Amino acid sequence: MHYEKLDDYPEGFLWGASSAAYQIEGAAAEDGKGSSIWDVYAHEPGNTYKGTTGDVAVDHYHRLVEDLDLMKRMGLKAYRFSVAWSRVIPTGDGAVNPAGLNFYARLIDGLLERGIQPVPTLYHWDLPEALQEKYEGWESRQCIDAFEKYCRIMFTTFGDRVKYWITINEQNVFTSMGYRWQLHPPKKNDVKTMFVVNHHVNLANARAITLFHKLVPGGLIGPSFGYGPVYPLNSDPANVLASVNADDFNNNWWLDVYCRGEYPYFTLKALQRMGIAPEVSAADDALLRSAKPDFLGVNYYHGGTVAENRLDRPTDSASDKASEADQADKTDATAKTGTTGEKSEKGEKKEFSGIDPYLMQPKEGQAQTPEVPMFQSMANPYVKKSAWGWEIDPVGFRIALRQLFEKYGLPLFVTENGLGAADKVENGEIHDSYRIKYLEDHLLAMKEAVTDGVPVIGYCAWSFTDLLSWLNGYRKRYGFVYVDCNDEQSGTLDRTPKDSFFWYRDIIKTNGGLLGKERA
Ligand code: BG6
Image (cartoon, rainbow, N blue to C red; front, top):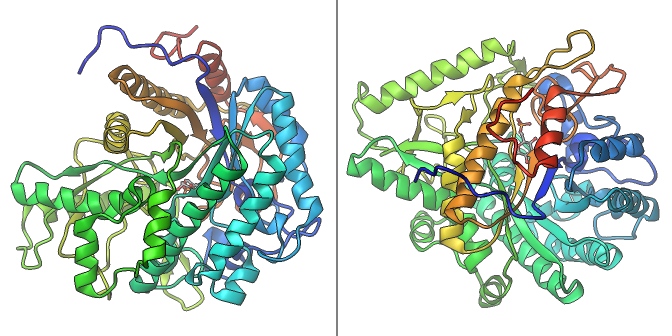
């Protein structure tokens, strides 16, 4: 559908920006905070780019007021941040740390005083280390009880002031990175365990939502999912079927549980046949079916393209060529960003560039590859890529919003979208026109989705300030506000608004009215 004129963004649209505790706060061991699995993991040699850690990050913990003032200056209507569970309960399920709660009280009250809606995420990957040690983390159901206890504290403390809540960030990413690709803690390669963990996180999400609805009437809660539409390589029915499989395996596997309370039928069958499906008790089933989110948080970076994965595929097939092109592009992206890879402790070469959790592919001969008979990821020749090899696909954003609303009928809240780039400071200024272009194209695509009729309640760009990328250090920047920090972790941490800061301020001021218009 093409429109002569797009609808305006709705009144009260939540124009925002996002962050996550581990990536910005620092103060990793201050005021009683306990360690998280990321505090430990980042300190093990070879796990992160140049050994970067969140010990100081961008020092948001100590620069809270300065950051809040910058948010107000930008005119933000919403700010999505995450709560470090181990700051609130240092041992994960023991005593509450009043200083930790007080930090979030200052943040939340500071936002409200400035007219900004706080949007806390309860879990953005930084599990308390004590729970990992005591129970093997999410592998145990005790972790679900601990999460519920932590959520209860958050809801009873802040439920009177905070309307919008996110339960879990990108469950699809952290479970696969941690239990399959060995790139996040606890660095395992065990697909069966990955599905167990995933099931436990589903139950934790459902318990949190159920509790929230009891304790915070009038509040709204939902998970944030890393969603990408799946395209078939072409109209070959075998490739179309592969795209149906991939959508089920990469998207429905989580979303059907969140929104319908059940695992998707075909993927569940396939996993059962392989002996790696999670066990769902009658009580689990009842819980999952009864807990419904009020909205769906959507993190959109890009989708993916797939083809049939024929085990006997001839090597010169079109899709193999596309795959080679993809590989070449990734290598090129690595060269462009200057990454040479690092040696891990064991000595094998490890690339930190081009890691894309949405498109990870099993390596040849890698054990336990459930999607092998279902689909294979391919390069999409129609879309450009960022310097890190991530596809740039604003039309895919509109498709994503349409598909999600059509499938699940829930209001959508875009909780992440943005461009990672290596920004340069020129005479004290940061001219990030590429970021403005990326954001503008996506905001226009979202406006088209809104005109199509999709109820979108807000948009939080990733990210407000520059921050620590889990695996890419500080050189891959997303922020509207530049932070003087580097991979040697020796910058001044001074803040400087980039060109995109002023651009987004004007977009917010006009409720999106300036999108696509010439600017003076
Ligand atoms: C999302 C995460 O997956 O992607 C963020 O929720 C993350 O925490 C963002 O920073 C960008 O990823 P990366 O690897 O480019 O920093």
